[in-house]
Image (cartoon, rainbow, N blue to C red; front, top):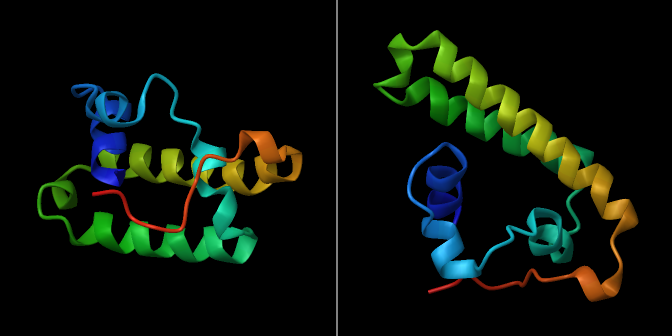
Length: 98
């Protein structure tokens, strides 16, 4: 799902929409995992490491910077928005989709 989501988010084909529907429901899909600030920071550390290791991105500071800005905003948005989630908005799960 993350692959589909990122491809679509950054201008590729709508792979995520084809699988999950019109709306990403980003917060609702993650709500069951109890993501807090520490988890968001840890996830960002992993994403930064992955970006730095990617051979094509090593030569592209602009893309690395844009990816990290997007990931930083998104990680903290999920944490903040969970405060306002209602139970009828939850759409996440605890299993990986096939």
